[in-house]
Amino acid sequence: MNSDRFALTIDEYLAEKDVMFYLEDAITQLLEHKEEYVQFGVSRYLAEYFNSVRHGSHVLFREFGYIKATPHNRASFIRIFWKCYRQIGKNGVLLSTLEYSSLLQLICPDFPVEVAQGAARMVLLDDALDCPMTFADFLHALQIQLYFEEFIESITVIYQDLLSGKSPNTVIVPTSTSVEQLPPLATSETAAQEGVDASAFQDAVEAACERYKHSHPPAPAVGEILQQDERVTLYGFLTALAKHEGISKEIGSLPSRADLLIDPEMDQELERLIAQISVSPTSSCSQAAAQRDSGRKASPRKSLHHRKRIEMESDGSTEETDSSEN
Amino acid sequence: MAEKRRSGVSMAEPKIAKADSEEEFLSQLGVAALLRGSLLKLVEARPEDPIGFLADHFANLASGSEAADCGDAEPSRTVQDRLSQALWNLNLAHHSQRSAFNNNVRVAYELLMTGGQHLCPGGGVRGRIYTELLRSLCTEAGLSSSTSAPLLRRIQCQDHEAVPFELFRQGVLICTVFADYVRKSQSLYLAVCGGSEVPAQRALCQAALGALRDALDTTQCADTARYLEASAKIAPCTLAQAMVSAQSSYEAQAGASMDPEEFEKEAVALFTARIQPVS
Image 1 (cartoon, chains in turn red, brown):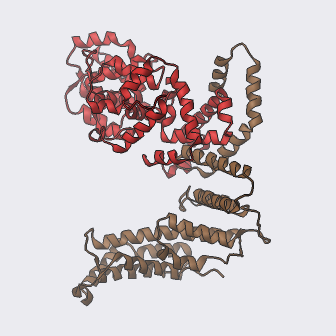
Image 2 (image 1 turned 90 degrees about the horizontal axis):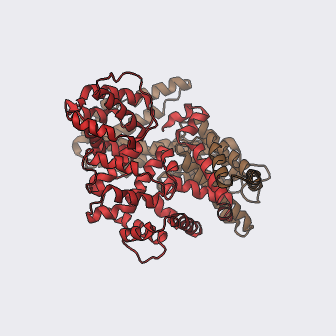
């Protein structure tokens, strides 16, 4: 957003950053946790709420519906996922889809397995889905899967239409079906391995981009990927999206791949987070904490409150460290 | 709103009374008035980052009410708070967004006017607070005190004076424009250097400063024509000509140079000399 904001109507201005959505959620949360939040005063509560939205820590332990609700929430969630489990990548551990899914559910209790599977399909090119993956690969695929979910759904339809010889220019009804209903595609695709004509696919994808005002990858990046080969498969395309540095930069949640695992500041931040989240401060390995926590799903809620209170009681020094990382 | 109702229902389906008590709860806390006031502030200022704005705004409110709870133990602290709130308001919009900027100046003015129990008899902001605000504006813009001191001497007021709004607005505007001017002159120096580490040639610097002075001296005609004439005088081609002729002069051959500090000082002097001293 730039100085054009002065030319917008009030509603457009507020809609641009989902201001009303956050205000409503703040009040909903206030009502659900009256006693706890009111003791510090409503303004202090709202200040804390919006401050956490600003720094992206607001999505931790929230329901998946909330995480999906705004682009900022999706990007924040990816960042938190990266921050929490970066250690895994550092140790070079390869994990399976289900293991990643459990990790996701530790920070978002109702995180759908299907979304993790969608990301895994991207990494593994829709093949041998039980294969373990590196953290960086999975993280980048998840980023695309989560951030552009609607876009991916609609290009999947386009791809299938092209594959079955239908004209992609027929009106595409945005379906609410998500990726989990796609296994039939997997079989039909192995039959037609050569994919579809890249330029026809590009035309259709660009048309789809125009329909989506916000959540689609930048058109130049799409063009760049699709002009490399004459034929393209859906997962070939999605994998290329996930690996594209420019798109990741545009979303702005993650550093470049080279810096993904190097960040001493983040190590301290991680220590701090773990110390706050886990009841026993002795655990320094996130995996150990993860395994211990997986037994009791109800606990994140409680520890969130615990965390909130710590933040409220502190004299703002934590806020300073928060802002320094941005 | 749908969101709110849904979660309310899912929590306590059988109790219809719940919704009433929630509304009561919110009205008891004065949430509606709080949100209305905040939204009005938000759409008035139209900051680039509305979420951050709301976070700061609520933090301001909270620290304000917490300070009120503590009583008047530390009046100087609350003046400081008001000053930082005023500064925060002033930084919301660039001065080229004139109507938004003016709005924010007004908000800052009213903040400072009500600040503390010592209201001026004539109304208006106290001179001491006004001067303090201008100094902080310059410091926040990254100007060194030696750069901004000559300007501040010209536009500051006596501590006991009451500053009317128009003067306040002018002072704030001058400081923000000045900060932009200094930044521009710094990049002008870098351009004269040509990106090298070596200090720029004195002759070239003087040619650039001369062109700048000429442009600032354009005062004869009406406003619009003046802007056009002034911008013609510092247009790249005019500047280039001046610098070409300077380079062939005697001084250029002597190889004297000018360091960035001196250039900035000269440029600042050009600006400051054209500000009418207050009082």
